[in-house]
Amino acid sequence: MKEQKITENIKVKNNDLEILKNNFSHCFDKSWDFDFDKFKKELSQNEINFSKESYSMDWLWKSYARLLATDNATTSLQEDKEWNNKNKNSQNLLLKWDNLEVLKHLSNAYREQVKMIYIDPPYNTWSDGFVYQDDRKFSVSEFRTLAWVSEEKAKSILNFVDSKSNSHSAWLTFMYPRLYIAKQLLKDDWVIFISIDDNEVAQLRLLMDEIFWEENFVASIIWKRKRWRDNSAKWFSKSHEYILVFSKNKDMLSTNFLELDNNTKKAYKNPDNDIRWIYRMLAVWARWTQSGVKYDFTNKEWKYFWERLWLFSKNNLTKMDNENKLLFKWDNIYRKLFITENKWKIPETIWDNTSNSANASDEIKVLFKNIIFDTAKPIPYILEILKISTQKNDLILDFFAGSGTTGDAVMQLNAEDWGERKYILVQIPEKIDEKKSRVAYDFVKDELWVEVPTIFDITKERLVRAGEKIRKENLEKSENLDLGFKIFETVDVIVPEFEEDEFSENIKMFDENNLSEQDLKNILVTWKTYDWIPLTKDLEEIELGWYTWYYLNNKLYLVDKWFKTKHLTKLLNEIDENKIFNPNIIIAFWYNFESKILRELSENIQKYPNKKGSEENIDFISRY
Image (cartoon, rainbow, N blue to C red; front, side, top):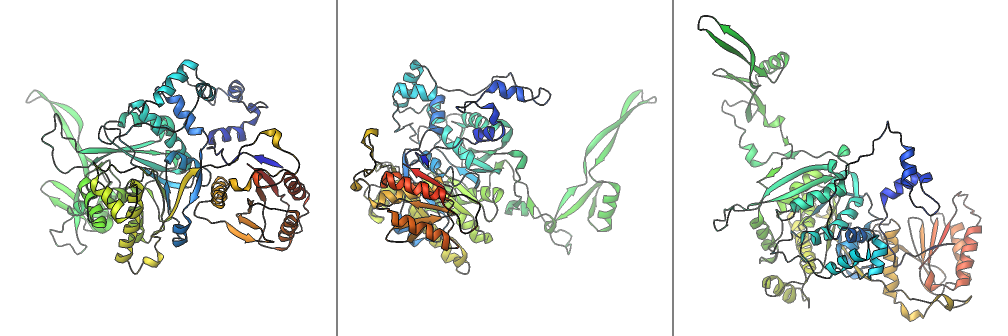
């Protein structure tokens, strides 16, 4: 019988370590400690040179940030059952609470499943109110042991953690573990877009170089977010922000071409009424180039000779002339490029045609009648990112969801091109400041009837209203569009604690009143996600002999109380007789089983003679 301490011990798996173990297992000792010297000897110096360069990014809390990236999740997952029943067929997700905890829970089921990540994190400016806060409480000795730092440094870092700082170090500590886990969710061939401004763009670039590796940098995009000049500015009127673009593996990356925008289309004209429609006049040479020099004895001077550098071969120019695609004006030659031949363009790194922050406020106003969220990104901005980076069936993640613009844009693009893109949005229930955001506060409190208004309530309501708007505008498509979403949130883990000497052969593991039915449901949701099952897939509930089994993807979960020998008999019979019931893993909730029943289960499963002829053994796992 295998034992797993999973219920309150969800960890993000280190994929790099798994690769090393799979390919260089002989470089690990019995305790699975890595022997780097042995590893170096395995590699020929002709194949690889170990760099002596020691350049790296460092900041005060870096060891703390690394620990947060690999530390246990401190929560379990809970679904909003009532809401999800109304959206049973939806594949979209809205997740509530701290995105670091959520990302840890997603790290198995959604590993390498996400095609594109877009995030708009706190910019760490004086106006966005960012301060670093962390509810994890390490003692000095615990942190010293876990992070491998001195006692003095451990004290310094933990004091800094409690200081609620908004320094660059604080911001980097906040971002590092989230980006570290996000990288593992991305497919190898795709990309992450991050909005940022001048305040942290330099730090973010270095951080991304470290996590995603410098060679996977794709682009730095400048977005013109304002259409007007601020003449009250002290030095320069700041009208732009950035989008940093990194790939998980740039060698595998390919982006989509974009449809020509209206401004570009204006360059296409038809002055000679060509029946092939509008076109652009493009030069057929690149430039004049110096071809030689000769002395002029008459004028007693050196003369340079020039010739044109043609962009096309003689054969291609002849072909264009035969097709009536060349124009001769003065001493210049141009070719006609018809719009029917050039519907697409490669993305550029300056965006001045994807709307601005004022447009985003107008979009919110259409849905809510009032501007209740003034920091949203505009829909065309997110649409541009989606069109560059996704295909019709891709999964998109935004773990700083804000007002929910990404989800809105995904639904709009699906309506436009009949796509089936899916989104995962994560938003913390940050309280809305009653004084600074009075309109938003009053809306959530008075119209949504929420006692403590939060940003999450706006995110949820926007997705609902955006979905309804898209449904009304696309009645002929609406049946095929996924305009709903399911809701999950992180909650505290509730498990009993025992002293080891309390156990005996027939002891009940704990007072059954300790865990409610909801607690058990939360454990199931958390477990299935840990076991690589997406949140949008529901476990099948099977009633058999007055006991409920939970089954999906060849995994059988036993979490309810009162499992007896008669249920084991029924389980084995069901495995033998039911053609579509083929568990290869059976997982039991240790706390709800008597020890003798656990042992009986384990022994019978191991000795089970599979009557269906399957060569695979059934694993039995006891989890606590």
